[in-house]
Amino acid sequence: MSDQELTPLARLRRALDQRVAAGDRTIVLDQQLLSDDKPTTAVESPSLVPASQVGMAIPVEADFASLTEHNEAICNCLKCPLGKTRTKFVYGVGKPTARAMFIGEAPGADEDRLGEPFVGRAGQLLDKILAAMQLDRTQVYIANILKCRPPGNRDPLPEEMNECFPYLREQIRLIKPELLVGLGRIAGQALLQTKTPLGKLRGRWHEYEGIPLLVTYHPAALLRFPEYKKETWKDMQLVMARLGVSR
Ligand code: URA
Ligand code: URA
Image (spheres, rainbow, N blue to C red):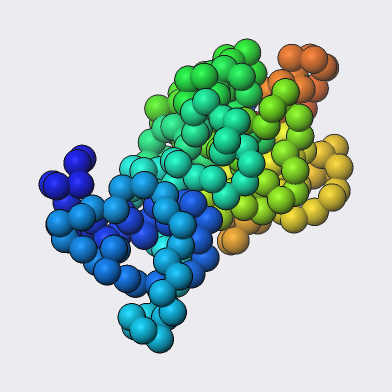
């Protein structure tokens, strides 16, 4: 949608969202933001006008109305250095009202190129797992802890996860899934705020903010260690039982 088609309020909202995505924590309401005829389009440096001169500072941990709106607001994020090296921002894919949400670690090379999570080799295995569960990627929702690819597929850094995690949390708030599946150690440990090894996290239900969470092996790990598939399948049966899916 072009800025011209937006109502003044929607235009203000978009301008604020862009500043939030650029990393601003406090935004001063100034003439530039409020201007009707001069849409704020890009990420600009925060206004230096003192709040006392123009009125209020707006708290920016906003609740969005939809996944699409949220994605649009954050897709130019530069909060951490991965924003400079990414090809595409990988927001997430699936059904906005999914009952189950699968959460991985971070985009890899294929995801970075295509802008969709789990589309490489690990993703193809995830599709097979979903098929075995009588599901597919249009019925569930798939996202990652990080929305941008760490160069060379290194592990996400704690600062990157801290900056990015609020995005996932807002996705979960909008989707309201009945359950979460954490794929791999990084996702499981980030969601549970623990350092417990994956082998001790998997196989039973946990909770993330009141939502049942199961943690299992990452599909990429299953490609390297096929012997973990059996336990992964046990984990997925716990998920199916909770969803009331049988096969
Ligand atoms: N069935 C669905 O339609 N969606 C889910 O997320 C899980 C089961
Ligand atoms: N691995 C992940 O954790 N996420 C992806 O999207 C792809 C590979």
